[in-house]
Image 1 (cartoon, rainbow, N blue to C red):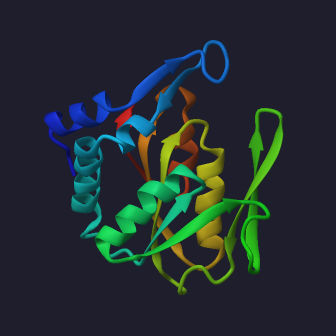
Image 2 (cartoon, rainbow, N blue to C red):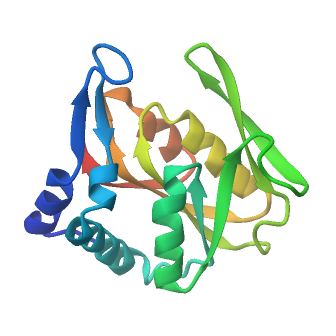
Length: 179
């Protein structure tokens, strides 16, 4: 699916950049301005529906927390179930977890052991891919519990950090915007 240049411009222009946040030298991409812009959010979701309606998906999995926003809306529009991938200790039932490296240390994400029916096709979604650690761990979790991560979708891909390369070892990657 190729978005029109006009649609991409609407989405791109709706994302605010905040310099030196949260630390000096970082250009933070703030999606709250995309979410509160009804035209841009609608254009984004319409295009995602067009892309994924023929994928024979069973579920959408969203990474905490902004992946929940896009994932649950897309799941609703496609008539699919939504599954949250959360930070360790946030889910109430039996979970499977996956650790991933951070700049200084490790973090961990979890999913319910029974989140998907076996052999389900799952789309993983999040707002942004940077280094790819959380997304790769999330993709591994989907596969660990007996489903198949058929694609990882991101609204923004920070290309210079090469996070998409690690995920391409596991599944295909689609980004709406590459920065």
